[in-house]
Length: 217
Image 1 (cartoon, one colour):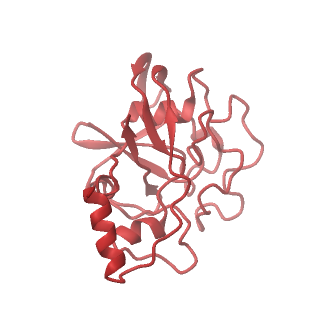
Image 2: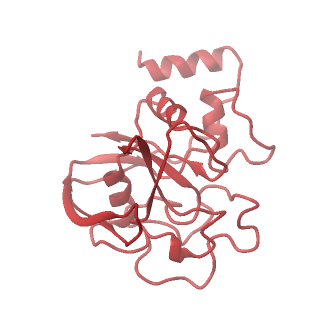
């Protein structure tokens, strides 16, 4: 039996936690070129084109309910079961993905899933929307995954511009690369471009930092 399925089966059998509704699974990102990089800040990646093999990535960020199903000790406020999980260091995010039979996406995979093959600035294209990612509640309340119908990439990945930062598998100078728009700081989509990135120590965790998983073909 698959190690991940055995582990999850043991949790259910022990009655530790009821199984959540497991999102929509992964989406296929076909093999081929990917436009990566851009920007002028100190963490920016040089712009270029790389070739990636076929991979699969979660359509949505991992939620509180999903994470707590595997790690029952994870605390979260009542009513936030379907919001993106946060306050999770890199090691725990990586462990969750491995237990689920997947892994954290590489930085290049994350960007291709968000950007498509045409090098677009935002997951939906080039136009900067008039509304803020999370009007009024920004910085106070996270939304359920998939709430924003605009924030969908060409491949069908949700919430890659205006939700939480996300851990990736890559490291630079002993720090982990994080990608994505940030709901409590990036009050404007101008700060949620598909090529934006930040570097954070892997042992740290924040209320605005979550993750999604990926797997190879």
